[in-house]
Image 1: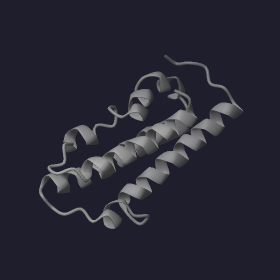
Image 2 (image 1 turned 90 degrees about the vertical axis):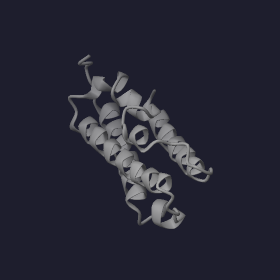
Image 3 (image 1 turned 120 degrees about the horizontal axis):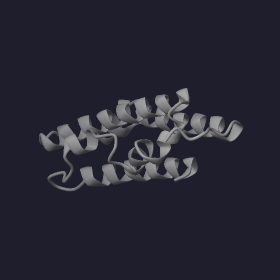
Length: 124
């Protein structure tokens, strides 16, 4: 996966989460959503993307992706507890989820700029 695909994968995952929350009984499990290595981006970060692990931008992205998954899991926990999810509060621009998501995209972009500016030798 290249880093442009990483942004698309992250965006796609967000849409799938929002759609799942609209289904009765919310079919998602918070523990699975919280795991930052299950999404396509997370799998890349903990797999092929590790070749960038010596870059601080990579470590920042790993940390921010984990924060994003924690924020998403909190929303799923509320839904699974039967609480009504206010879309604006959960996903709106002022929410932790939206902030974490923006930070992930920014971190992907920063990693991409670093990699394009200076190719990195593989550490794997």
